[in-house]
Length: 363
Ligand code: ADE
Ligand code: ZN
Image 1 (spheres, rainbow, N blue to C red):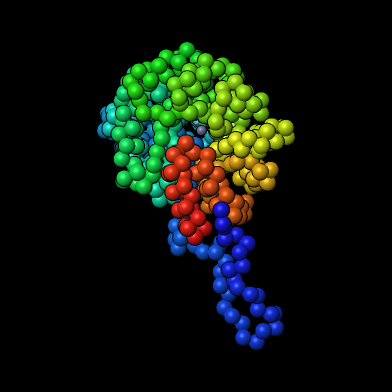
Image 2: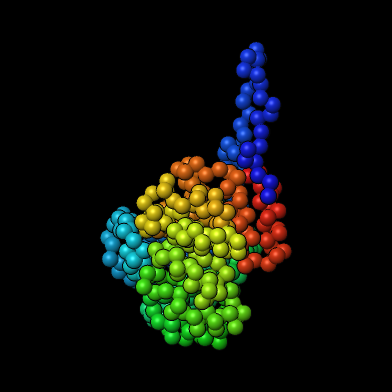
């Protein structure tokens, strides 16, 4: 992939003592975003329930006659101070109470896609947590059909191709997950794969071997959160015991050099979510995020937003902060955009189309 980083766009340097100095032409890397638009990317790590913005939470609560435990938007926003993954999950699950009808799920999905289009997303692989809705008495058809109805028109309306991934909650039993997977298969739900999310520590991949084996037999793609808060051994087990094709987060692989070597060698995609990691205190500050070290090690990393409504930004915000706070180069951003496209489950034809768009994007 050709990038503009390091390209001498300033032309031949004028000698220091030149009498008539040519006006400085900015390097491509300095061309403002509004000139060439956002980086075209695939978003591979996105929980659709994590895109519920505070305004939409209030609007859906009103439509459904639900009394929220917050007086107003400011009070809700004041809860967005997380100490760890669980403190976020508590609020994330509580706010799902406003999602009751197919229309609610459709409106949430439409809101994400319209924002994602502005962020440069050209392809999105979207996780849905069916068990979090079933446990509240919302039918599987309601949540799946609500999201899927909008995904079906996404390419036409937003220019974003999409795939739906059913994510299973690792703090629930494997039997519960298997039961839901069988229901999804029986209703011929348009899912491309399965994922594994929610509270990581204490719920190792080994717990879900039958689930992932069933998904593989059913021809589904397989991904899992691992190495977000959990140890590097969870990444190894997700690969060895669950045969996952991608690791969500995976940042703690950096604690195990042998694992890093394995991941580099196998080109295993790691869907990194920098702003999420800071907000959930997996890392102390963005300045200390391991992403630059992961890139330097040659890992196949991409940038994703995880739960953008909760973590202070969509994928474009993640890139912008990586550039402004840790000085990530345009070259590395383009490299990660290419990684995201290549690591997606899109067709080869669609990948080629997106890579061509990236190459001619001016980035
Ligand atoms: N569910 C939604 N966001 C999550 C995250 N960052 N980690 C685990 N489970 C999640
Ligand atoms: Zn996640």
